[in-house]
Length: 98
Image (tube, rainbow, N blue to C red; front, side, top):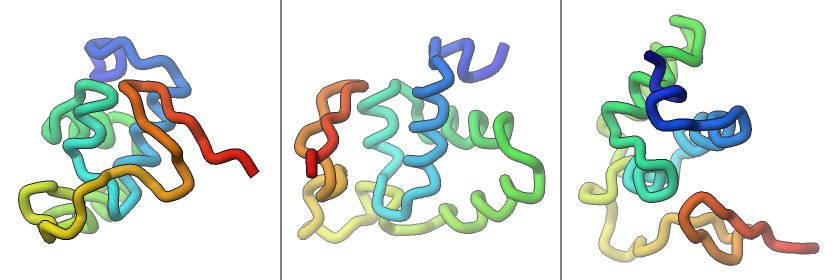
C-alpha cells in the first residue's frame, strides 16, 4: 500500500505535500500538522512519487537542513506559513487575494 493510499491523499493533496517538501522554509512538522504524515512518511512518499535521481537530490537537500526541522530552527521563526497565505487550518489553505 502506498503512502498516499494509507493516508487517503487525493491528487491535489499529494501535489501540495510534494510542494511543501521541496520548500526550504516549510518544516516537516507543518506537513504533519496539515496532512498527518510524519517525517519518515514524507520521505517514503517522496521516494514513491519521484524518479530515483530526483529523490536523491531532494534527500540530500533536506537532510540536516535547519529550516526543515522545527527543533533546529532559530527561536525567532515561530510560524510555518508563507507570507502569501492568510491562514492555515488543517488541510484548508486560504491564499492571499490580489
